[in-house]
Image 1 (tube, helix red, strand yellow):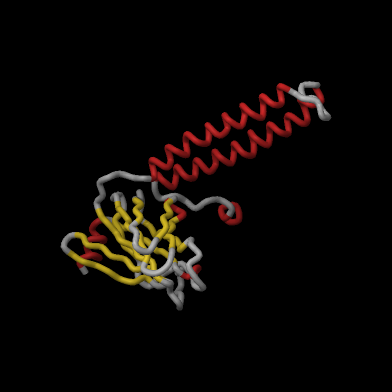
Image 2 (cartoon, one colour):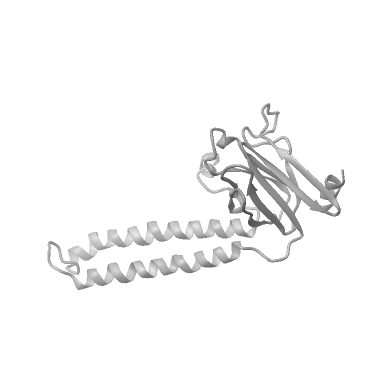
Length: 225
């Protein structure tokens, strides 16, 4: 069961991740079962029945098929992908705003909420403890409330980085001198891990992201303290 789960995408914490997972499965079904199945059906059945003409002679049915069928397949993939892109833009109203700044090779976070200004650097843990995830745990994790709309502003202080959370289906490039935005929201408490997915230097793979979603009471106590 563990090997089977390792072949799948990560468990999702929000609607965006669920929609990305569904679109991934649907695209895979279209490519494998419909497209490849149609080609096999054409070669094995239609050709032996005389519908497809072998050799170098023309076939109007074949020309019609490879023109119309891929068009419908692209349409069936394009409509849900456009819906997903629109859905990933998120809402216009947010409960909190978090700023993530990429550096070589760590992340800096800022939050100015409830009259409290909070900023800290987040480095990967060098010495892991029992229960930590190797190359994913950090010394200062980002604590956020779940069931809340959170806007994340992403930028970089040196080179191109990328702030990616696979279990939430979000990814945005951190560009120097530019602010990119994405929205995150978790429907349940828990820890979410991510990494920089941009080749930003020799320690590119050592820029983990760790978000911990808690209830509002624990979040407020952490912010005030």
